[in-house]
Image 1: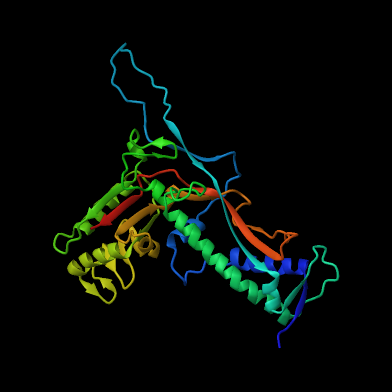
Image 2: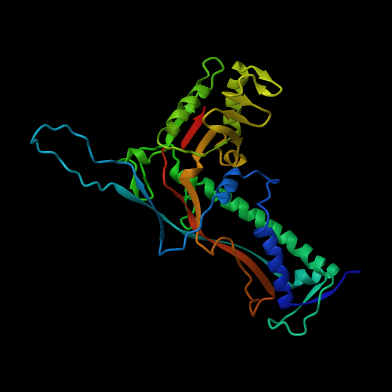
Length: 350
């Protein structure tokens, strides 16, 4: 026989708030469905800002004007007034996700609601009755949490052209055509220092080790203008297969990896390269038809910037007067920003 529970509306709000806190503000997004390493890395390093009319700004500089010159006796020397600071601007955006459930759904689960927001005649719920409500909400909020993770992860991997109302993601900054385009208001055609590294259609070869040698050469260039890079290397499955092919062919492979593990090391699920780090598989790249791509991301150069107080903000609005439905949602306001591009790179194989 179904258990019928009479729940005042204010008690329902308390339960939904606590369950939402568990799902949204508790442990990290579930990684058991599909790994989301880019989302995890950016969430871990996010930094709030106090808000503004429209933009988040980053002051950047890539040119220097002063020069050293020789002189003798009363030679006229020159003076320079440097003015090379540029301001990268990123427009912050508002995101929303919500769920709804109806009075009929609650009734089916053996739950009735005292339809009042004043909480008159509240009834203390037993532990068993709480579980009935929590189970119903758990199912809906688990869907909401994973859907949010997938949605934000997708935004972070795209360039923003898919929807003008979301902030541009990583591929807005790290592109295949680095000599064109305006990024954060700065023209890359006129500012070569505001470009990411790129090498496309690399032909993997078990004889010449083209891919491995290219990555080793790029490691030097990626560190050239960054004194302390923090690389996150994310690859599609095809790129990793090409890299594994080269390393398997020439490496002295053992159960613990290569004999010369200080240079390259290959394990069951991960490859490491000196001066770059671990090459990780990101399934989203396969989903986006970028399985043959690799992105080397300097995490010190990028920051996920939610507005203070607007990071996964919870909302529990009252029931509409003309609908027997309840709504729960969360919103987010902010953007992804970059302060340096030439310490990150885009690579692909054929």
